[in-house]
Amino acid sequence: MVFAGKDKTALAAALTAAITAAMIALVSLAGASTASAASTQERIGGLTVPARPSLKGVECLKKCVSPRRATPGAVVRFTGTYLDGVKKVVFPGKKDPVSSRYIARTGRAVRVEVPRGADDGRPYAVDSSGNRSNRVPGTLEILPASAIPVEVFPVDGPVDFGSSGARFGAGRAGRAHRGHRAAQPELDRHLSCAHVGDVGHGGHLGVAR
Image (cartoon, rainbow, N blue to C red; front, side, top):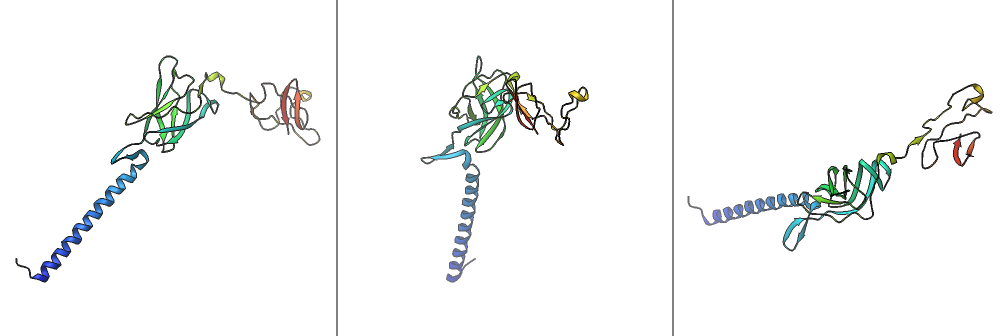
């Protein structure tokens, strides 16, 4: 097939436009792939390598003695950056380090369960590429489950026991006394309420409403 001069020019222009469009599509596709991995990768020179996870804090969420004092089996959350690639968190152990696989993770937080055998210390994270994070700032204490605070008087409303003379919550001038929900470190196992307001008795503080 023979093309005239004008036809050759038009064909060349059409081919150039098609090639340009294809190149733009490929660049866009590569850009989308790069963006999806941006949270776990960084560029060093001309190379793209997995970003090293970094820990900035830790907090106990479940089965806790306090935010920085957990128990075996407790759920703890580590915060930081580049954490969506974290595979496990390594805890100091009573003999050897012990690790726990992530329960949930995002770029800024990862949740794990405290493994049996974990001891006080500063855990660190490891991602799927084997990169280790820094050790978390501050110490995470691991205590026995018996150290978890026990709620005392978990009631809200009048409580009737014994005879009418010993009835707790009996009405006085149209008012009733109520138990106060609190953790043992705040109060104690013995709670005594006799009047509206804060009540002290035998060194124990109670609240009557």
